[in-house]
Length: 116
Image (tube, rainbow, N blue to C red; front, side, top):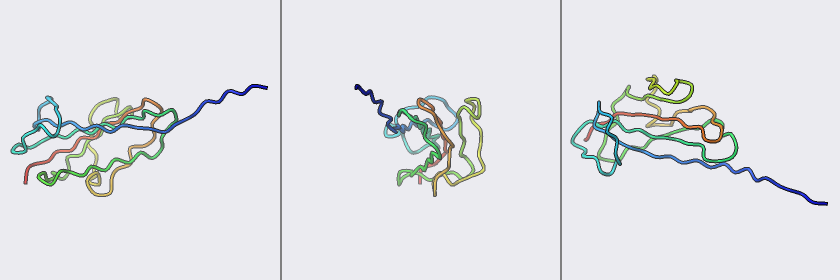
């Protein structure tokens, strides 16, 4: 008798980029000057082999940045890849639930901040 097994593995990546607010020239957050208002884009990707449910993103800003309330937007398959503003500042407090993602599924969260 012979058996074959397939191993399912949950896994994900989270990346972040920043741009001067109102532009689309994103780069590493570490390379940005903090004397401007910034758009910070966080990307979650399901890199595993199984669906991940109730994906929560919480963003902790570096100490030199302050979140601008009311600036959280999400882009994913539910928004047809377009940025949709959400009525929640929870992304910098307790996190926001982005829903469920199949393997290779992704979601973006964008917040705006300013230097302290």
